[in-house]
Length: 221
Image (tube, rainbow, N blue to C red; front, side, top):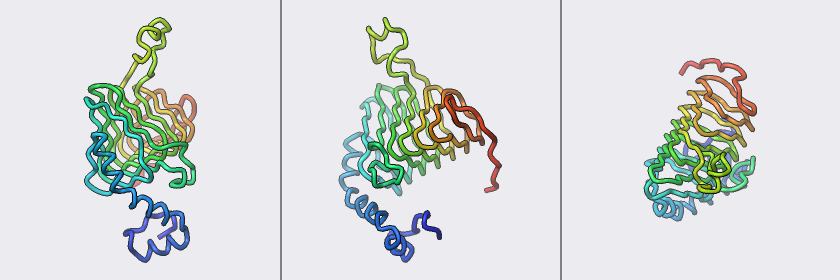
């Protein structure tokens, strides 16, 4: 096992070896375990069901759930909200926000995110085994209207459109995923990219606006 892998069990020879080699990881795990009762209570008070297995919260995320919205998260969630939980240094806690009645934010199994925000006013669907790099923002709304007169009348009535992020997607750090896009199965979004249009499956896309750089080799399962 290499030093970048997670040990198979918290109390194991591998875990002890990693704790001796990288004591900050041991500290992160101890803090996570100490936080667990408060984290479960906080999630419940926010109106979100705690996942069936394997949730790991390094620091408390900020959950802003409209009571008439839906926010569902699968098993094996991992959110890193403290600067010391990731060497990239999240700027702030992970924020999960559903802002309107009827908004639907659905996150599949084995989702990981460091810092950053997911803001849903209409619908955001994230598949399984999706990893989101530090300080990325995923938002399905413009927040504010583009027309100045409408902005004066209804300042929070920006355009919205659903976002879909399919299974096995990797999104690099400090990206911006904007309304109305689909990112296809297994694709990779390069760090610092702004995604304004659909990304097909199995490609690397990067830039502002993000464009397909190349196709990924298909790996056999």
